[in-house]
Image (cartoon, rainbow, N blue to C red):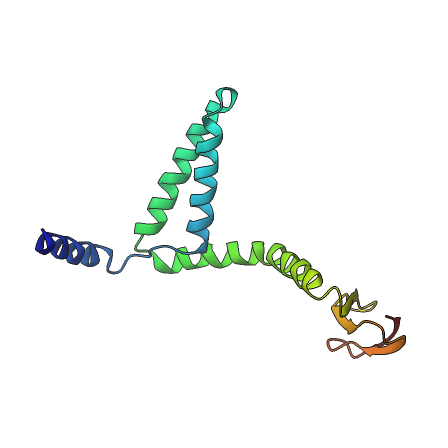
Length: 138
């Protein structure tokens, strides 16, 4: 039995050689597919079964594709699209983590997010991006 599993694993490795595999975009598509499948179980939303199946086919196609350059471009476009969303959530997490000791605000000139220590009174803050000085009360 174990010998059979090892041979099957080797065959699968040879099959996947030169193929794209999974990336963040495929993971996102898989999660959306599963959510649509769960929602399609509700009686009025059964029409979501078709888009879910289409997403599953697309995800499988991307995984087994040999056009690696094209799949990499798709993944980079997806990452560029979701980067602002991820950065916003990261900023909210940092604000919550640092809420007792730091104050966050945006630079008036370049809109960069600046972090200053709390309880220092009125201070001059130099923006690291545009080098402008802003007076803030912390």
